[in-house]
Amino acid sequence: MIAARRLLRVRETPAMSTTPLRWGIAGTGGIATAMATALHTITDTHTIETVAVGSRSEESAAAFAERHGIERAHGSYEALWADPDVDVIYVASPHSHHHAMTIAALEAGKHVVCEKAFALNAAEAREMVATAERNDRFLMEAMWSWFMPAWHDIRARVVDGDIGKIITIDANFAIDVPNPEGRHRRIDLAGGALLDLGIYPLALARFLLGEPCDVRALANLTDQGVDATLGAVLGYEGAIAVLTTSLEATSDLTATIVGTDGRIDIEAPFWFPQKYTLRRDVQRRDNHPDVEPEHHVHPNRGLVHEAEHAIERIRAGERQSDIVTWEATIAGMTLMDEIRRQVGVVYPSEC
Ligand SMILES: NC(=O)c1ccc[n+]([C@@H]2O[C@H](COP(=O)([O-])OP(=O)(O)OC[C@H]3O[C@@H](n4cnc5c(N)ncnc54)[C@H](OP(=O)(O)O)[C@@H]3O)[C@@H](O)[C@H]2O)c1
Image (cartoon, rainbow, N blue to C red; front, top):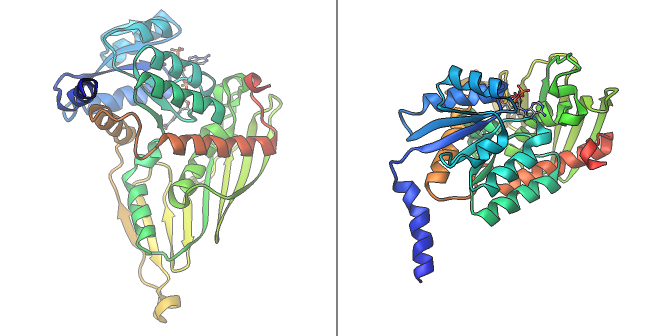
């Protein structure tokens, strides 16, 4: 009973506390910059501080800290994990490093929000989750699209039957990334279109339809062995999702959800949209002419939605998100494992 009360106290304190939740950012690249900015914009509404950044180099950490008004710059990731004044770590490194960094941060007693793709594969993801459980820490995959207001609104409309039963989902995410030295094309950094970009069309299909019962994939690989262009067809009972992704050229970055009674077109960029259009196929149902399409505009505050969610869950003493659950993250990695198996992409640490 005493032990139970003690546990309750530990879990309740953060929810009621006005003590700032202190964030540390692991990495100084593109998305680390976006998160530093996002966290800065919510200091008015949430009691948080971004107190530290970690990098492989002193210079990089110092420059990042200076740019974002962060107190402490650590010239190694180990120093960031060891910082006693950090509560939450945001892992913003290449995919190849998510597993090791997340585990090190959790073992050091930090909560962790780790960028997508969460890990190289499902086995790594399971180890990361087991480490969070063992250390009684919060852990979440930063799949920001699953927090977008427009995606939630679309899912509510689908559930309400506004477009009938989903028959197809068609989504594309291809951008031209020619630099052979960048992380997107490097096999040692777990590059490739799927883990970086293709994960978003998959996320949309899984958000609306859940996990598929079948998948077929084809890809063109680079000389390094990463997928430069990939197509996947996901099979569901009564529905099919067709997804394309590439590092070789830029597509229109939209998505269309076709149902028996209408369709939803999500404007680019479909993975963080502001606007979508719903067209009901009234003619077919009621023998009336088609109605004017309805346009729906939603706020899109970038990474803020996922960051706010993580803060609220941590404050409430939760150990995982109820939107991007551990189960969903592992299922997503399992699906990408199967797609990579079919197209023959194997990362060096998997050989
Ligand atoms: N949610 C989104 O919209 C979004 C958008 C883009 C990317 N991402 C995800 O965010 C992660 C990082 O992507 P990014 O675009 O920010 O990449 P990036 O610009 O290349 O930055 C990655 C950072 O990781 C650190 N790092 C640690 N070990 C590294 C190594 N061995 N090689 C290279 N860098 C290393 C580097 O910081 P130091 O040099 O300071 O150590 C580097 O600045 C990926 O998982 C990606 O899929 C998400």
